[in-house]
Image (tube, rainbow, N blue to C red; front, side):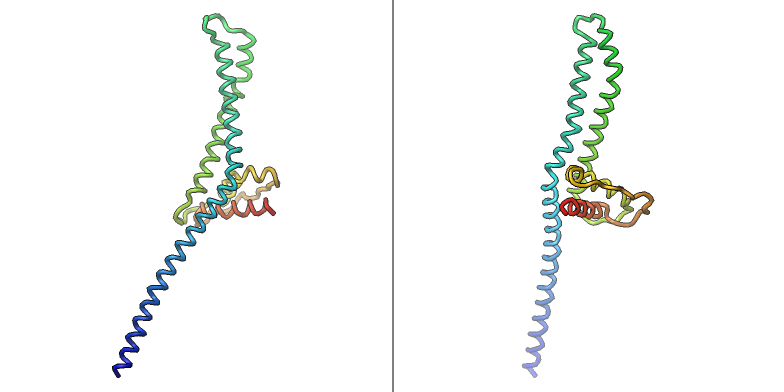
Length: 186
């Protein structure tokens, strides 16, 4: 009888060790999965970084050229000697100033959208379901992938009228980024 008790105690200890080991392995597997997801994000960001730099540079160039032109026109209109400005330059400024200002504004807005989309994609952390607009996720993903897409394929959007769903918008966006990049590569 003593041998049977020892055997059952040994079985009980072995079962507890197995359960502890299983719990440790499950925790390790979850952590590894998170690491792999993060590594996949970083790999995707690395792939997209050159295109994103190009996309940010284009509006920055608009802004830079616009500011230089505005500065030159302003200096021509208001010379240091306080003389009357040249009427031709004044007419030129009146004609072209709204376009320059609009180009600068659109450049700034585009930079902000690109940077916000990138930050949202790069900093996706915990899963949190919320009201998710699939159309917005598609647009954000296309914005992130814009440089690769515009050189390879044309995109038709038919995303109007899609109802909101309960999902994590960052993860849905990541799915669309992956699908778009796979489509481009295919």
